[in-house]
Length: 466
Image (cartoon, rainbow, N blue to C red; front, side, top):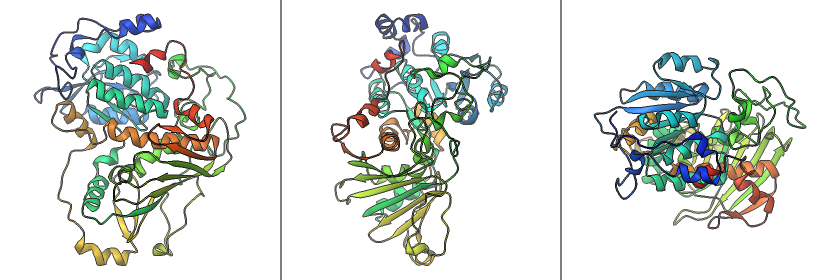
């Protein structure tokens, strides 16, 4: 598509890696990025409705590839670049390459931006949790719209910096909690606005499907194995300390490790609790307590955990708690209203002063239990007549200035931060008091250390200064 101004400067990977000098070089932005500053382009850079959005897909296998193929198949988009740290055709990468045969394939996202920055409008990021932050920060600083698969980032601090960058660079941003554009969103919004869902005091959220790390016996980082020829193992780590390659990291097993993933919280929390967090205006918790950890381990997530979040009053809404259960057999108690029923593997129970609601994940709607009560109240329920675009179309239309992203970083960042706090409780245990204003724990210095996590590797510090 035609750019507002031809690119006249690019970010050199060599300069970027020169430390402080690299930061100076990095801050010289391309002309089209400068043109999108708040002073000159209120609301951020937008693509004309008559033009297609030029997409780059970073992470073209598994979930990232699925998102890229779906969004890249839209009549509103045109895929111009592919990027994956592993260039093999396994785990769906070949499907993405075949769907977009004319798009060049890069292994390093920095090289992709160096060579094609003037041709990219928006970036889809479907990579491991620990790599979301540097890719998104670089893209946003170059004026690119970004779609980031959940969770938004690996640490509380990274989420904070991404929320700040969204305001600074004025680009469209969306996190991939796809249910936030589905029936669950519409119903929860309508039911809260109508006062059907009100005065909520407690939620039980449960994720009882098996996880990759279940059954693992880990006492140290695993031994070194041969690195696949198609994989840039150094780049795979981005900001994190490098470990010897092992199949228990890549592909897909990275979520099991505190160093690289956010466990079940990062994987399923955004699909179970997103509308509860948004429409009950929860923000950040005032306390996070590790009620139960089965097989706590300094390297991988517990085999099961029960984590309790406490939230204060919000206006006229009462204080409430959320108790999270993960692990195959770690389930909440059934309410009397569901006697004789079985819980699905993943979902939520919402307790208000008047009703008990039961729901699943993603797009699934909630219902009042028992079923007899739901049938009795059905005629009084608000009718949902609102229609909206899909999660992917919502992002593409936001890039064109036609809609606002429903799960922008301003929305999804706070949600992801709640899960990052939960991960800290899974990691170190204890009862953690959190200062919502200062965004620090009051009673645990070790917990505060994990808000930012380990120091970035040399050469990667610049991403935290953009």
